[in-house]
Length: 170
Image (tube, rainbow, N blue to C red; front, side, top):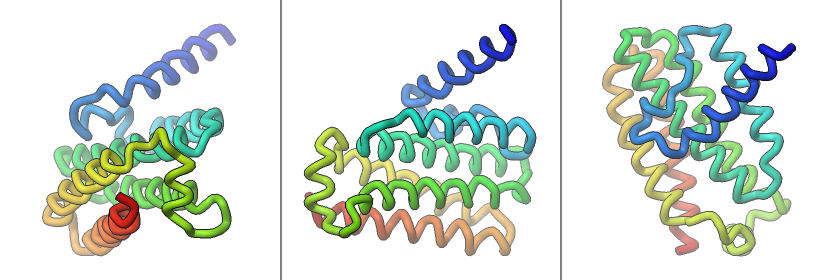
């Protein structure tokens, strides 16, 4: 039991320090090609998301996880494991959906009103991070097999759409 508690503390500390990483690859804790551990990590990410009580905390955390998913895609390509890119891509798209959900959680999609209520989220920073993610996704598209290209392209389009919505509020 004590070892499990130590493991949980280590994982939570590593999850909380992700924001200080320098590149997308630096944010990767466990690569998706190590499926058991990656699924275990995803479970802890969801548990950590559960303790994020405010909209702004959830948006920033989803953005951090989206960064991590892009890093996982880059890492998988570096390892020539392009068959696993689909897992990281689907989780990336899920994080973008989570951001949209939080922005729309009032039930009406009045983006200006919602973002004004989420004052601690720096809209310019969110847009910039999404733009960098899209750029890296563009590089990833050139390196994955045909079946994965469409999925990565759709994820980039979804992020681009979110940028368009956020840009209207600046």
